[in-house]
Image 1 (spheres, rainbow, N blue to C red):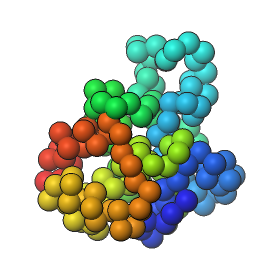
Image 2: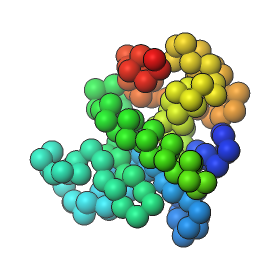
Image 3: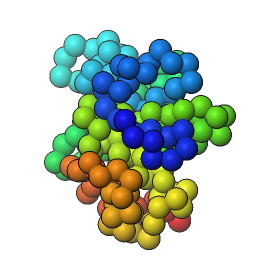
Image 4: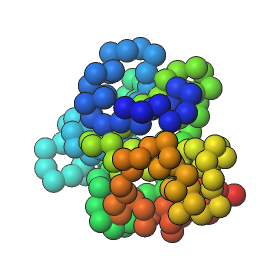
Length: 160
């Protein structure tokens, strides 16, 4: 778990398990397995696409994303990033600590953290490539998969 900005942490599932009972922490859970599956209680391949929480579920101190780490951008949705950025901003403004986590802490969670820092102008943000280069200085384990393609395609939706 690395603090990438004041009270903003990026990590993995183990970091969540270690901090889940600390009431100072709020969580962005960027993982279908096991977080989204557990929140919705589904047992098949995926949640029902008609379920109102198919993409995003909210539970106490958590936003839980139905997000996998595929080699392509097609399984990501802008709303997941938009709501995550709002959740992070609201909680940091309240003085809460926010941990963004996925399973391993190398692709999805750092991508959301990178995007937040870029939107806020904390790191370079003219392009995704520029932001990634700057972000690697503070989070050297960043190795994005298909989420990289998604961010490259949608960069201007967030950085205005």
